[in-house]
Image 1 (cartoon, rainbow, N blue to C red):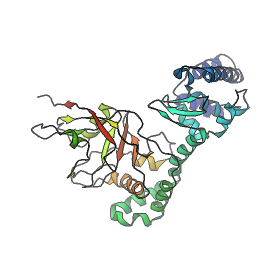
Image 2: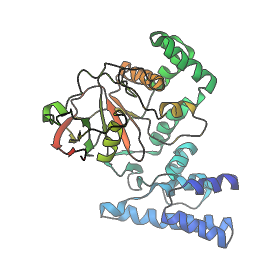
Image 3: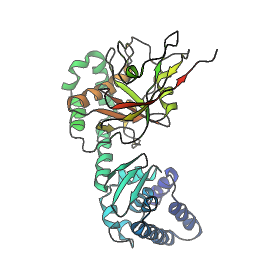
Image 4: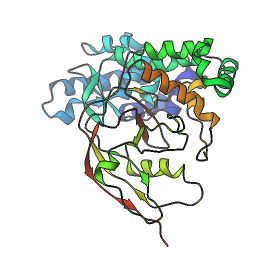
Length: 343
């Protein structure tokens, strides 16, 4: 790996203790000294986690495993038993993505990666790499082809799946290898109240809203889906995007999974040349009853997911994660809150 690329990785990294020490050592000594010391520190952490009986101590930062993949020497470094296999199976794009988040941990004894919010579901290095590769497959769609396809969607969405790009998108989604699940996280669904602020019943809040007219990122006009977020503030922010300048009172129930769903994860960071994912994430202010052209591409993706039996999509919010499912029977009611407008 070139020094420039190594510096770029460090600039974008969510630093672990070992990565901070690596950077300090590199500044004070040589790169070889820093690499050697990093390998020793990582081996010490790995070995301690392997023999630990406390669950919290069985885990180590996934950034360390990923950084080992990217630094000079890689698998040639002196590593504990099993570490080289994990590093070898981890793709470079997946490793780069892992260095940029502190939300993923690694359990050496199991050789699996875990998200902090979903400790029951672990992925091995190959599965992590497959997940990253799936997102990067979209980068093969050029910007000119993407613009042409979006124009076709605007002109006549019903024939878009017959175009070259439409077929490519469906091919990628139908071949998707890695899925995320709801797990044990508490989620939040938000819904604006009417003029009299009459709250919804619990049963109503567990169902997708009926008679919806607004065009959504993953729903067409008049077709309801169930949107939710992993934070209360995120759910509130998302629903306010559809309210214009005047903010109404909002009801926000807490939700807990009562059955599992299989989702594709479009929330991860991607390379700068992945224009497709950029276009899925365009921020817009939509008007009820009107078609939002920026939503036509994600609407098509949602249609592909439904066609192949995928239950929903996890996507990126502004500092939180958003979710949408086509059905609304995945949750039980855990609590309720009303955010009232002052005055």
